[in-house]
Image (cartoon, rainbow, N blue to C red):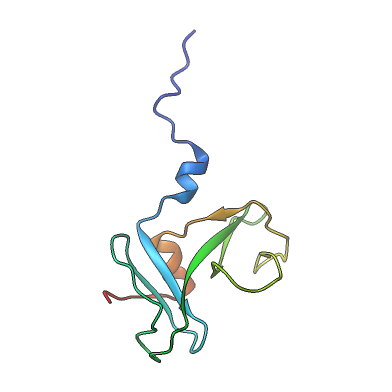
Length: 109
């Protein structure tokens, strides 16, 4: 019996793929996203400070929630916003629908 595995995506590669880029301003808190081919920063388009940072998601298998936070910064590891479980090795690139649910607004610059 042959098993067709050539069509299945690698879970690690799928976790890195996204259709959008997400950002948060560490100064004013604005949440933004752009199309995948558009990159902005580090100057925030709202407050004009040099504090815009890209974001990453952390997926919680317990409650299927994606916690979105700045890619860098903070000494505390990622923790699920809903159940407070530690999210080691759970990094995933947020997609446009995730960023919208997080409260981000689409921008082109």
